[in-house]
Amino acid sequence: MRMIGQVNRERWAIYLDLNSIISQAETSLKAPVVHITEAIAPQSPGSVHDYYSNGDYWWPNPDTQDGLPYVRRDGESNPANFHEHRILLRRMRFRVASLAAAYRITGERRYAEKAVSLLDAFFVNARTRMNPHLLYAQAVPGVCDGRGIGVIDTLHLIDVAAAVLVLDKEPASEADAHILQEVSAWFTTYLRWMNEHPQGVEERNEANNHGICWFVQAAAFARLTGHHDLLNGCREQYKHRLLAEQMDTDGSFPRELARTKPYAYSLFALDNLVTLTHILSTANDNLWEYQIPDGRGIKKGISFMLPYLENKPTWPYERDVEYDAHWPVGMSFLLLAGMAYGSDRLLALWQKLDQQPREAEVRRNMAIRHPLLWI
Image (cartoon, rainbow, N blue to C red):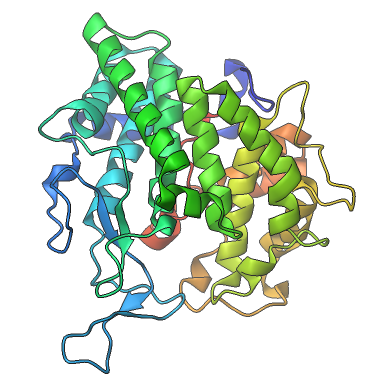
């Protein structure tokens, strides 16, 4: 399925720094493989193969001797929580995406072979693979071993799914083709868990950015694995639930505006809703132009945020409690929407804003790090 917004090779360099992508891939060629078993989570009830993380905004209880149960401080990230599996997953994602993007540019198989070796270590090899579930994601000490909202931790794997589609077009060898099939099978199993396990269902039903991100993942993974019925289901939910549930009539996201990081969360919700629009749009069902009867649609969401991207001091809501000065950055929705609409205004912002921010908190809120895999 060719998505609206895809462009010919001759135009890639207009939008992207191809030399920088190749440089990142060269660094990834020399990097060691990454696997989940590198870090042991002391509080995890699972095995070394089970992903584990703590909820961001949970802190030791000041009123108890052992600090349990943890208490929530919205918007304030606890640096002492266990984040190592998140870091490993994102590190693998960035390297695989860099290598796949360089392979797409150059056709040099050394990039593809290294990417496949990283995928093998993280998803296939019995000694080092991650199990395809998130039972223990965003756990809260003294409260629970894992939560449905932890499913958002694998949002970064959408870049991996896109990379596998690129790598699988011309695998370097039969062995590589087999590994890529096994990776796709991993995503099939994980997609089933997301769609059937109570924690996955809970996340699917969330009415804020978590719900959007569930559908972004489901759509990206279903596209990889050929689950067309699920793709169609995501499209129907987009049209008949997500817009009405998430967006106000002015294009804002009220549940994100109510948070202690209203600017960053509004951008995050918009970025992912644009990605979902990009994945699900077809020539016969163009969601870029779709709107519900009262006019709400992705165009309105972009129109709401655009003035505050161009001139952030005019933002009329509360300032973010953390990292406010680090936003905005060059998020992929500016490129995807800019190409879909032929908007010089959006594309100028894409070129102007920093596409490779250094702040880790900002990077972790960017689901797509290599848009070349998507256009």
